[in-house]
Image (cartoon, rainbow, N blue to C red; front, top):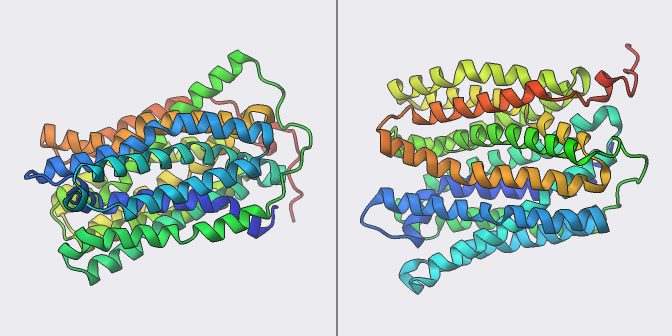
Length: 418
């Protein structure tokens, strides 16, 4: 397996992405008041969520530019570029003065930094995933890639804990003015260390490709399957991350209680990622995709109904733990099966484009759509219906996949039993 410091260097970008995402979701209400003041709290929140979604518009462009750089010049220079831009986007938003200080320039700058961040993240996932897949032993690709996913959920956990502490230590006015900025800058503090680690990265070995060259028809099929997989996973994950805002604005729970939800989602995500990666190496990618999806179809609606009726912190945390664990069991397998299906020459740009388009269309709109659906229907169960539909789409794609795990395809014999 790659050295731990190399995995840490690769995982740093993904971790910062999720830390920023969760922190923005946590403080969407406060960010809305800072850059989009309005007499309507709902309008301010929707403007904040739309700004969050603006960053997803530039992800496909970043996937194309940085992904092709990784395929042509190497994984390392692409990852250095993307991480530097990620740091710029996160710090830029945190340091942008509020609307009350600079007027219309504030929302313009906020949107610009989110779009720069989206561009960087669009290329980050392809280069970093390709690096780990190519550096890992064939029978450990799932477990190795799960370390990257686990780092992201560890960042979710860290963001949740930090935000809960800030919410408990500050008044609502302090959170509006500078509390959310502190949370973002704490995440951006890892940028210098991440860049230093990435500077020392070796390129992964250039051995024989793990798949045969693909025809344009096969690449199109992989792209469509991957987009459906990631659409389902993205909407599911973003719905769970929205539980913080949902608990505060729809269930009426205190901010300090609502913010604890993401810490739960992060902790259970780490467990689900590592378990899912190990299981996919041992039993194959498809079983670890299909079984959790079927469980989610059964569990989502009862969990949200319990939330609607109880409106209790403990029910909230229990629902987040159950749904968070089950949903992340299949996360690693999705990324690995796409990577294992693509030839090395287009692996980075292929992963990046499939991921970026799926995230741009479904991730960028997920939280806005949930907030809009709740407002339009008046039904607090709207997120559950939205998530159920997404899981069903992903399950249909899973059933059409070709198994790629070496232990199931016969490309590599299984290890001897002790």
